[in-house]
Length: 455
Ligand SMILES: *Cc1c(COP(=O)(O)O)cnc(C)c1O
Image 1 (cartoon, rainbow, N blue to C red):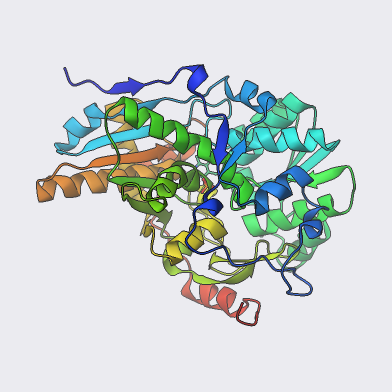
Image 2: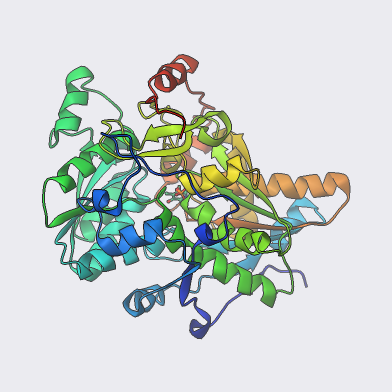
């Protein structure tokens, strides 16, 4: 028998702490700068946007941070999530490699995003906040925060990037089912949105613009705060529940990864599965090869500059040092909407800069090819974003076959693609194109990077 195998932890084995990689970094993160003064930011500068509990996590260097019991109670609905050994896929590929994947599509919203939406809603509720504003690309984050808002009695307003809003009406319907309001961005509801529409009424939108709209509204009211679905340290912290479980499950399987693969948009599912393993390595444990996979049409890690930049287009956010394509960069409208952000998480950028991880960029058609091959072997239909990780893992397995060596590969299958069937219809209809960004657009966006004295 060589059917695929499922490794399940029981509820009592669900992590009680998140893992904070800041405790184990060989060099600390560069400071975050105030957008006005360009001086390092103090915790108080963030209070208009986030509750203090999340700000403390953002700057913490403690290795373990306790997961509050009410959050663990919600996690228990779908956590611990399963880890699979993909033996049917291994057989189809004819590879000597062992392929494992952690599956985060079992959450109510269908991805890893509720792992942070739930604690963010919890801490905001604890601070007496009534309303959260946010942005969403493909709609995964918007529906996750809408779900968490419904559980904790918080109103949610989502600015959804217009191309995705028009491509994915079912994601919007899901947000509305959970009780959130969803607006296409750029919108006429904010100053930043109106300024963009005045220049280009048919603007397709970008995550940078949607963030400006959400931040602008949150900064105006005391009972309203802002929630971000990726990029920030506290978001990656919450996602480490994925990697901590995966470590225990690999131990159950009597194995340890030689290679870990995850896709990167803002870096949260990547940090979530990778950081617990990388932290063990930094504390003297086994060395792991780590590969980030990003879309060739929005390649911040492989083609971006490691520089201080704004998180949004209207320049309302603090400046962080990260791999960036420039905050005004608008990527072409490819299908993995969750991977269309101009910047990369400062933590992921930092470990890339330190040479602790590798990065590769793929075009979308080969990713869909891999996703379909995976679905036919393992039965799970991946989200277009997750197809990038599947492509990366399959390529690693094929390399093992070529070299005649067996390695253990672990990847994060960060979400299912049931709301993304139009992308699959386009793929099967031969309508998907391997889009490239405009070199002139990138050059212009990079030329507009803020000048910050060497920090
Ligand atoms: C949002 C999303 C991503 C990209 O965001 P990260 O923060 O890089 O994880 C990837 N996959 C899925 C399924 C998503 O919903």
